Image (cartoon, rainbow, N blue to C red; front, side):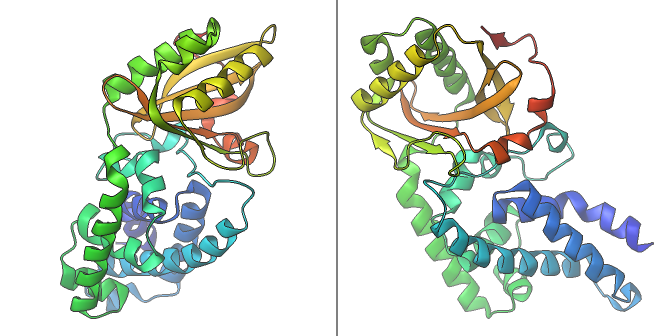
Length: 298
């Protein structure tokens, strides 16, 4: 098998791992490019398990990049949110293990973990490597790997009470949110949110966004009432779409995509709004270059 065939055979799995590690498609693609260069410099005939070699190289490259990214995100202007996959990555065969571990809410939850914990957790719990195999990939002892996975699960449990994947409830509440924004009223908007709801917005210092999380149904309702009134008379369009396997809301002004929003919810109310407004991240979404489809809401 040629190097190209070998790499392409495992590329989707490698991308899925790198993206979950880094939360940014461009960074994941950079990691895969570096892994490809290392493969070209390697005599693959000497490899007992080429897939394990590729996963090991990809994991360690992603770890190095994530350590640098953690420092950069500490200096980020306001909250940092993961970047959605463009639709070309949403093919059924594009990434493996397409469960909640690919949703944007879960990627944000992974930010609670240190780089080493994140890698160990993903290898063991998402990509189904045993502790011994995951330890070998990470270059650590099996007991150390087991401890990292245990700590990661404990940290993730701390954030999980607010995390629920219910596509039908998300889509229903997004529809109600759009209706409330089209006929804004304080009571209507406030009724959408749980009392302890949180709003997180990522503008990256390049677009207007809240610099700190906002908490409480009343504060969120006042924010969106102000935004709705500010948008009166402008060419604003809402589109309910699917990002990373979950319902999301795209807001366009003219043909420009200005916001990608996803929510966490219980059966009846929104518990969190995550609004991506950083134009550099939005520019990489395939949706921005295409006219809205029939699901657009004017």
